[in-house]
Length: 327
Image (tube, helix red, strand yellow):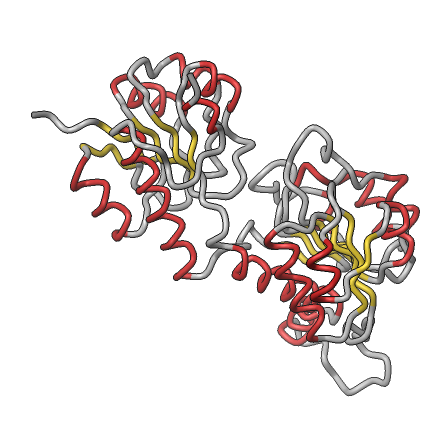
């Protein structure tokens, strides 16, 4: 009996590929860094029962139209804004994702980015490498304190809560804004709820942890940036679409906020000629929030397990659109 076909749009850790090979015939785009060409994707999904994808590959209506036998889409990510969920749901195709497993790793990276931005780590490293360090100076490469400062977390989900725990270890005052209040977080960590405007006004560090939705699209724009302290730092390791990048560029260039640390961008990969990359008070990373070896491997395995469940008609471990199982 012929095994069902699964298209894997980026080479995964061997643990995940081994699981898939046991029960499916695979087409694997072998590159780890180059996206699968659109024409190749459309050709390969034509007889596929499953797709294992990631945040970089758009799985839109055209892909679904080219995949009449498709039973499941599984993404190696928490977010799924690259997938046309409406079309998937209309066609009773479950979409799997990998929540939970990456929370602590992403919180580590978020706090590392906060520290690096505040203390100008990247700028200082470049300063030394370029031979500019001639002597110690009293105010050389100084930045704002982290210990005892006020952090404002926008989006108090699993990752936001994990960031708050790290902030607690630095004796930071923790403010948060969320669709719903989190009394358990308030009690456990002493976090205080604020409206978005209040949080922006009061915080020394504004950390974006909100998902990409129509409601959060460019939620940090010129007006919001104008509410922040001139000494404030913006950290975004959620989704690039949550920030108006042109407004951020202007605020940073004109020193209306101190600095920004960015792991995500509206268009990824960000172009080398992007205006933000001309500024010294910006630290940029290539979307590596969950990039520990252990976490990425776990994510890949869960994505594989979701795909295998889907091709067998079984419930996924984590389903974005559980309504496909109704009726």
